[in-house]
Amino acid sequence: MKVLSAVFATSQHMGRVQVKIENGLISAVGDLGFSRDQIDFYFEDDCLAFCGMGDIHIHAREDVSQKNIYKEDFHSASLAAINGGVTFTADMPNNPIAPIDDESYLGKLALINRSKIPLFIYAGIGPGTSPLSFKVPYKAYMGPSVGELFFKDDLELEQAIERYRGQWVSFHCEDPVELAKHSHAPTHAERRPQSCEILATHTALRLIETYGLNGKLCHYSAGEGLALIRAAKERGVSVTCEVTPQHLYFSLDQLENPTLYQMNPPIRERSDCEQLLEGLRSGVIDYLATDHAPHTMEEKMKGTSGLTGLDTYAPLVAWLLKEKGFDPKLVARFVAESPGRFVNQFLDSISHHNHLYQKLGRGVGFLETGYAANFCVLEFTPHKIEKKNLKTKVGHSPFEGHTLPGKAKAVFSLGERLL
Image (cartoon, rainbow, N blue to C red; front, side, top):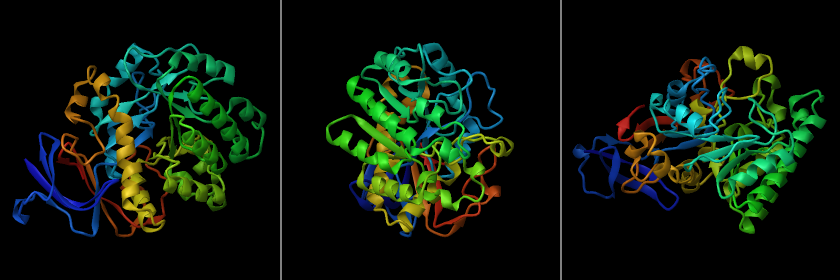
């Protein structure tokens, strides 16, 4: 047994609590009556703890082919996550050998033991694929991005989605036909304009509603599209939405070398940043997810899309709290509880195929008995992002040189302190 004491934020409460940890799980929470000398981990009032932080959109680059592990692998991605205060992740399927059926999914799932924190994986949807025999999250790339798992038009997409009725499907919203129209524009942002995302948003929302999907829109960047998402939620469509720290923090006018900041969808205008921040504040956006997509610096210089983000998750959460005035209880919802709720629903299904998930008890993301003792403790001192402190295998970050108002002071996974 171990005892931790800290000021915790949940969506319902903020204040000092004691947490009793047994067998890697939370066994009691509250004013438990432990004296200071009985507490194993005590954090002062100037720190703030969450019941883990979860990044449900990363590209760890590892699959059974092992072709891309020079960029990242499950072990190095977990080190970057811990460095950034992240205690559970979910990996996307655009691998050389994509997890698109039972065999390929289980082959990739067998590799997750290399991660030092709980890691979940998505299955891919492509032309001709069908649902797995057990419950997992799915990802559909509506248009070309990085990898070969995408659709050439809406008809091909809908023919596939029809087979996934009632499933949990996340969409990369960029319309392939609209992308083709702008493919010869001079800049990356002009080649992937907001119209690509808006058209794809209309399509994704229609498919979610028509086929009874539990939908999620990934790394949303178009401020104009938030009204569509809000309206869909209000009429009862089962849809949630991610935003990346990059799309909140950076705008086109800030980028001296846009090639190094290239991602899909691209960094947009300052007005989009402001609308995305408001969408996160109002609840239209449900998750802070990095789209951590490591490429070597040589690949970045050649124009490969994707930015790293795991190492800098906690500093950007501190930025939201201290510089953007976000309520800690709201932050707890979109960094811990909503991501936890998303992955926890798959525990019963996938735990039959990998015993590591059985250790998570009721799941992750909640400061309640029976849940995994996964915690991130933030400290609020200015923190300059420097290359030497990064853990991602590619060794660079779009936030290098930026000073942010905090960082992860401590990280716990299943009751074990990792940072």
